[in-house]
Length: 161
Image 1 (tube, helix red, strand yellow):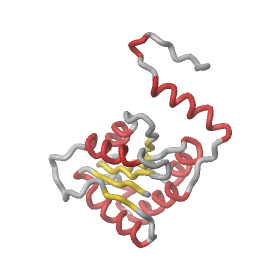
Image 2 (cartoon, one colour; image 1 turned 45 degrees about the vertical axis):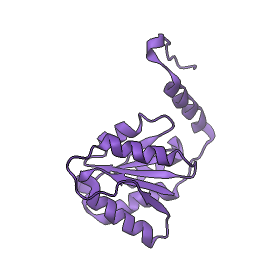
Image 3 (cartoon, helix red, strand yellow; image 1 turned 180 degrees about the vertical axis):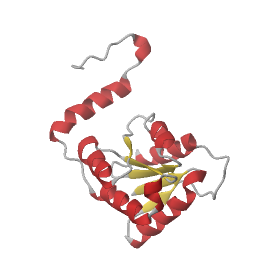
């Protein structure tokens, strides 16, 4: 299932993506039902998306803010989330193939995403590409170890964790 949400900057793009998901018969859940509300904050949206993505290993997320940057940063603070801010098809494909990304972050105010064909291509690439495993797995193991680290403990990362 695709878990989708946006802050106020991404409401219109989110609606377009939802219409596309419906037409493509892709299950989705919108975790932000508000209209264009200037008082909403992307960290809250990120939390709602990420907690729902983590409920099932088959879930993926689409998180939208003005640039995709803020919501990407917020999503990546949630343990178990690998959010990728992708601004083209190749980035979306490689985020899934190499990083097993589980949240796609999009910037609604970016010029590239003003054409819905571009949005559709990136969403398609993310939804329909799968993790390659293999040589990439050791890197994901290291990422999970980074999530567990408490810098205050004085542990050093090193390359052989």
